[in-house]
Image (cartoon, rainbow, N blue to C red; front, side, top):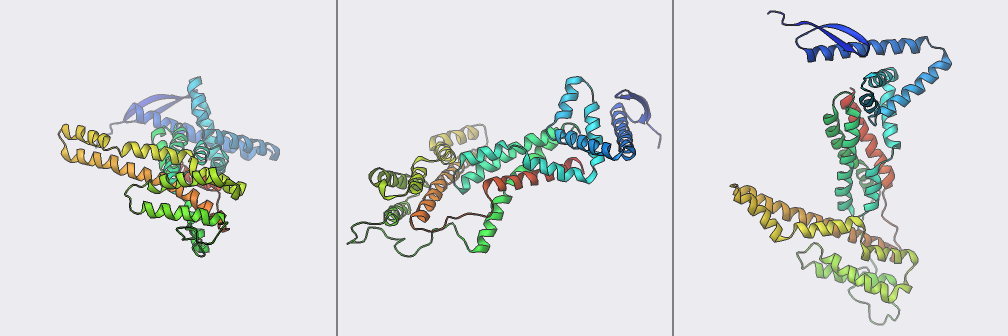
Length: 370
């Protein structure tokens, strides 16, 4: 087979290389790889021959430059200056750090500010709403960090995709750990029964019913009414009115902490409210029918039916996510008035987020550098 390569002259930085390759693109890639390998060797030799005090400074510089790469700084600086020098030095620093670069990256990701964690915590909501919003926001944050880290190796798109996937998967780790720990402890989010937890009315003869009796009656009546309704928000709508009336007429019977819990039931947090509003919007049959009809009219009846079903299904899921926020707030209130310990996992939301970010960074490092 004939050799179809030819010689190209390629400049990398201030150095010129003569490269045998099939085309110019391949020649550039080969020259860049060779140039980087030579730079890595020179920087390693400089480190090996440096005095002990200087090695410490060089290591600190390597750590700083490698950390800046996680935020795309070398690429952005080179773009501004029209060079590739900073990216090459960053790659040489990472090579000199060796296997220490991965735990360093993970530690940086864990310590770095997380807009997704802050927003998820601020949105609050029930378990399903937290899962939906937290997973989505973690995926977006992972895509941002992954895209920035992939720029220097011309893998911005792949880095964003891997970062998004790793971010969404990482977000599941903390809640999974909490669930396993609670299962091992025999703990359950369900409020324990017993006593008068299931009463539907205040027993005759009780002149001064306890806060627990008052709250449990309202809860059980709302559950009974909701059981005959197909509306996922039936319990939420009823209990908000009942607890709101109780707060207005008899809040002196409750502790300050319990009154705060009552306001959370009635007032809704951002995630509970957003899920309800979006759920009602998507569940609108005119909207779902119109969207499906438009697709049907384009000549695809099956896709039209699926579109309408997707709108209605998504709307129901979001309504259930909203209802879950109110139900969780009520469980906390009932536990408090019944003097039962709160349902908590081993990990706080902050710790859970840190674990997720560490897992995300490990996935990025494994793809971009291994």
